[in-house]
Image (cartoon, rainbow, N blue to C red; front, side, top):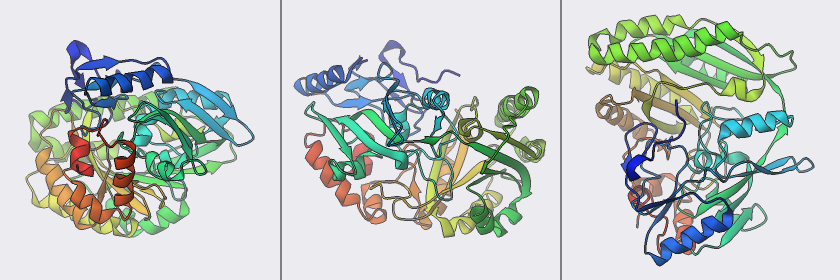
Length: 439
């Protein structure tokens, strides 16, 4: 799988294939100065500006008909401060490269999402997260940011310097400036023991609070049309390291999770009536297993089957009710869903537009294979999520607008006021931001 979205013939497409844009020009700056110059030139030419990572967002958050900035030359670690336990990294660095480089230095992020193809700036700007009882999204691990603002100047922020910008820009949606570097809190490399096992859907819901409380990182996948789930618990371990064997890893992670799964998607699309039967088989194919390894090898996994996704954060106490309603809706409908529903959690954080801002949250994600007709399913799911005051992931499909967000984010006005100050001429505007942040 190519981790970058394609840019042939002046057309940009996202990874999921559902967003296409035609920028007036593309710029690949090799330094912060070059990036600042590109922003100033765009202003002179009356063009808007958007930085794009690997296109892993399913919304049109990175789409532009103005200047498209590709940050892939702005990569690598700038600085490691072992006293402060921070690492400063260039904005275009893929998470995969950051994780590898940190591990070589005996360091790690505390928590991460399950895909590591994205750039650090794209992942944090949209609120990418994993699952955690105490440890939150990737953006919550940021200790400092450097960004080029609309007038081409370089602004640095942290809890001490420009704290109002820091509060918002960690998940800034690309609306406040173009991020050029990020300083993350890191810790000494540690080991995680993963326990993956099947569990009945009703048991997971009945025991959800216990499963959440007893594990540092708990998540599960529910297979629609079945009463089956696959659960995963990750907890810190004293070792020794016992990685997944090469053959077992290939069989479970490549053959079953990607190969057989891809074939099941094709069959399911060709003959939708077979989906429930396929779901029964595939939900039983993944057996229990345990392994111990360094964090990124436990948290992340390859995703070679392309898909589109909607994910909402609901208050953690509302998650079991939300899932019961989702199951009832699927059972009542003619929908045939061949992709599992993913459920994760995050503690409350203090980032202005974080989906977990000010409240303990649970995430419910629904997926459809790339090219499949997803609207009926996502619309019905979204109705349930919004009834529980759900906040959609900024990089995943949703239909909400500024009016909805103003009612759900207590500090929404803080963010839009900051945007008015930093980008009064809307240099970083696009259709998506117009919808979610208002004019």
